[in-house]
Length: 486
Image 1 (tube, rainbow, N blue to C red):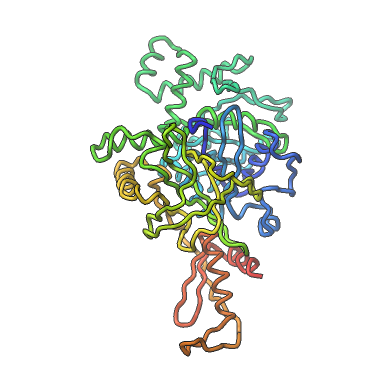
Image 2 (image 1 turned 120 degrees about the vertical axis):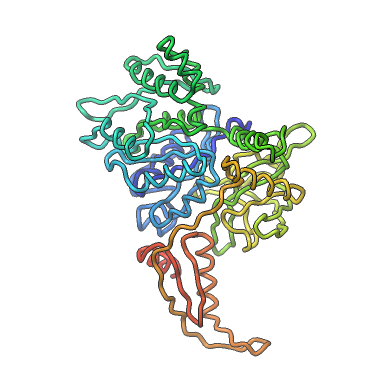
């Protein structure tokens, strides 16, 4: 796969907006899942805590081929677990903000859109649950424009029968070769004209041409839309229903056609650095100084840790082909040198697909690496030893020029609203070789809580004067943590 064909995207939005359902239908529609998704039988929400809550607690990673593209999708939680979603967003090039059409504008819709705008994450909006009765789409779009401060522009028209949602007609077409053209479906002309005007308003040259001739060539509209999304000047909208499996292929079409590829994202950052006269000019986007990756998630179980890496760049061999995973990297936060084993995976929810030894790793890929040291945390940047100085310099320039990418986005702590004192279990103390009394029960509990805090960024532990304080998001969150200790 060419990195130009990769789209690295997070599904974000308010809890219960339908993100996981859309992700599972993507897998089914591309024949990766054999069984049709059903409500209450989630494949991605496989953790017992998620099954009990009927809601995601952790981010889930999946790889979906579509129309000649490779979609690296992250399905994220929200609510008490927004920090996990933020970590996934920080490692993504684009986002699909999922908003429930039946629930209207919600807090998660607003906060996820704001986060994307502030951190340079390009996004489109997917209205879910379009099959629900008594929807007023025009009013919803108007409310979204008022709340978000940006006009949502539909890429489709809605097909209904007596008010019942039946499907969508797209105003563009994406063929298997990746070519994007204007659709000729009857009834889509008014939507195309709305898009045409919205795109013209984002570019001075296009606006002058539009004012002179009252129209733009279709290829200029499509290219202008891509640039407008890339520059965060327009918010495309698609309509979906997981219940009816309607609009899911069209959603994937929109992701493939209008969200940027990882090379474009790196090119924008490198151009900004060059223009600032601080960075090096002429670097090849996606190759640059060699391998660099961001840790976007960490899981810990009885078999050890699993670090999920979003690849930012990678070196090439003498034939111009991307290299495999390096065997030695440096953690920029700790300056530790870390050895990486030969084993790596691609994730499809809970399924781990082993990568053959020597597999080439491309910018934009998401891979899982087992048993990295405990010092490696979510949001860390890993790079090859020879590239440490170059990557640190590039991070500083991206921050100063506000051309933020997965390389330079800083992790942000979510305010923790709940604190509880943890009662340590009674256990018979025993003396160590140095005469220190060691409580094995305390050690096991603290170790278990520490493992949970590596997975869940909204969990922090504080030991003070013989007591243990647990900081988290809410009482419900604390109960969930307690259930995971059993």
